[in-house]
Amino acid sequence: MTLRLDDLARLRREGRPRGITSVCSAHPLVLRAALRHGAATGATVLIEATCNQVNHQGGYTGMTPRDFAALVRRIAAEEGCPATRIVLGGDHLGPNPWRTQPAEVAMAEAERMVAAYVTAGFHKIHLDASMGCAGEPDALDDATTASRAARLARAADTAAQAVGAAMPRFVMGTEVPPPGGADHALDFVEPTAPEAARRTIAVHRAVFAREGLSDAFGRVLGFVVQPGVEFGNHNVIRYDRSRAQALARILDDEPGLVFEAHSTDYQGSGPLSDLVCDGFPILKVGPELTFVLREALYALDLIASDLLPGYGDRPLIAIMERIMREAPAHWQRHYPGDPAEQHVLRHYSLSDRIRYYWPEPAAAQAVGTLLAALHGQRVPLPLIWQHMPAAEPFADRPLDPSALLVWRVGRSLDAYHAACNPEPGKG
Image 1 (tube, helix red, strand yellow):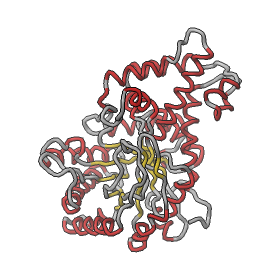
Image 2 (cartoon, rainbow, N blue to C red):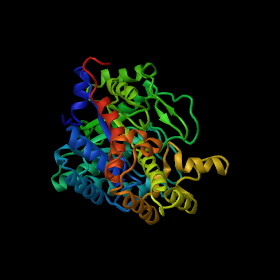
Image 3 (cartoon, helix red, strand yellow):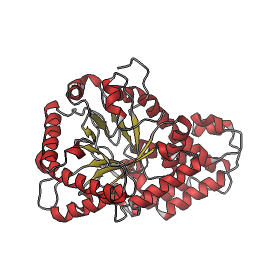
Image 4 (cartoon, rainbow, N blue to C red):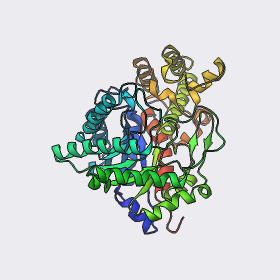
């Protein structure tokens, strides 16, 4: 059943919690997997782009919000996923891409970015103005953050009114794990202190009222908090609901709100289901989906190396290694250790910073060569068992490698779908 964002708080109050998976990726195969999954299950397909990834200046993907929306809609049409099931969201929309500049300059760009998102049809807007700009502290106080969020909300509403779009739904708050995961092994992540969450909500409500934006605050779906989940380069901290109950009880006093959980990658269906039942029904996932995509690509690279004379010895991983070493900006400060440890992290870290390199022309060409080489080939079952055992249904028949890649991403989405639709009475 297609679920609306506005339904989440009501269903929690009624004791029938449901969730929505937020797919945070710009990779076309991940988008295809999400939209194919939505077409098959009837679930809402929430796809979000981040401020650095997609913005009015192009972002690191080279796409504006309008470009990204067009890409999603084109793939949706190809997959038979109705537009009514798709919700586009903007994640961490604020001054972050321009934070090295003075605050007024950065905020002016952030306003233009938010307007571009809303004008392009993005409906779920996460406003994040918590980071300091030039000459400011790294993290700002609640009052300054809320004031800047209100400014961005006004820009979003003005843009929606100008084009006759539905008024946007907002998510506020910024107490989230480091983008893309932590850089070190973790033993424990402390959930947001309940009093800190209460204060953040109260300050935002008061500031929006002062700015004449109470209507906009009435369209706030929820706040981002830290429920105690995270992943590093090497390990995952899974949700422990016993540690988050005091935080979750805040929602009893805020019946119109839910919490949004970032970095839920690699949690598995059990912890994800607990998050949904405890009031964290918006589950953000990104690196896990590109990690399993990379996992499948490397498995196909091994299969082709073993199966096809002349293909070569794992050329895909060799090309990705060369690309990453030649342009280390996306991984170098995140991957500590000696050269051997860094080599492993470049390819297999859970933070999956290799995802930044797939759009590179040499990488796209290598993937294309791999998929073309295997297309229509019959892969013997023992070879599938050796390199990708779960893909047994693809053995001994003409292979469509792109379909296999989408299937692999879809298996991760299955766990999220199950968690977002818990059994009656759970919780």
